[in-house]
Length: 77
Image 1 (spheres, helix red, strand yellow):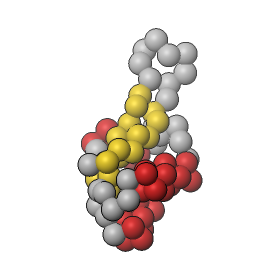
Image 2 (image 1 turned 180 degrees about the vertical axis):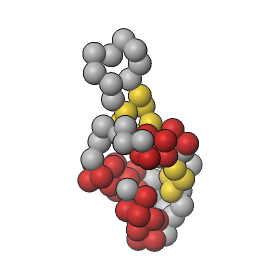
Image 3 (image 1 turned 45 degrees about the horizontal axis):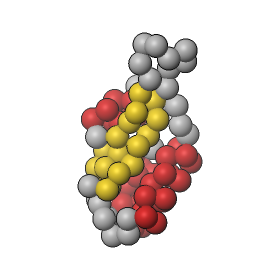
Image 4 (image 1 turned 135 degrees about the vertical axis):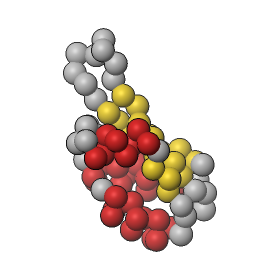
């Protein structure tokens, strides 16, 4: 996942900052989304915010959710 993000940084010529919750979810295998889904979200953010740096964060389920999830959220920096 991290190498894919590095490749996208190079491809688009922008910085993509990985937030700490994203890094933890990624390293701990808690991300609900696939590598391709994360790539699609980054591509979409670049399309809507061309030339802007991005931040990758997460949206997580809480204890009331029947099934735990950790979704990726990509926003302009």
